[in-house]
Length: 227
Image (cartoon, rainbow, N blue to C red):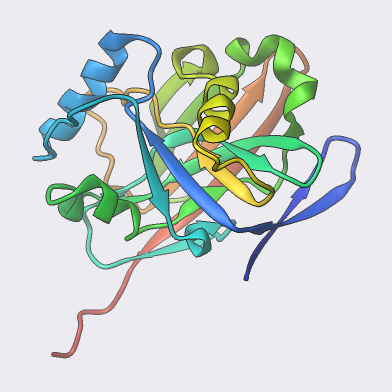
């Protein structure tokens, strides 16, 4: 059983058992942004999808609030995203970073999604509380060593397909149920920034209130196998 605990704006803490996890992909509203993301991954050897947007089911235990992500090698990286959490009587919104094995991604995006966690924030907003200004919410990501940081992604939720789009899709496919966590897909990365860093930090910001939700983690390479 994988349980996550979120603190809401009013101080209430809510624990959710993750029963289903899904990763959106190539989910930009702009075809130019989708093409840019396809090009980013093509540079790493990842074949273009046959259709967009994509939706990848992942193991529920991969959704995490960990501060450290273990990696098999130095060719893994994150992606700034928002995450939607379906509870018994509400839908929550938080920040997320989809950490992916880029070497495995060359052989299959769905496979690579199983090789790294979906790190989510420890705070969340009720989706209904920010529904009237969703497009203005900001997503920003930095890479670094935990002490110094370089911005690698910056955009708004207006660049991505909306939570309403995904809720409707899940409902039509009979996938909408308490315990479902869905990550949004990402925005383009800045050119020239090395994504293979030892730490990632992502912020989801609300310009209307100044509130910010963040997640941050270090990447620790595992010892070489004895085989």
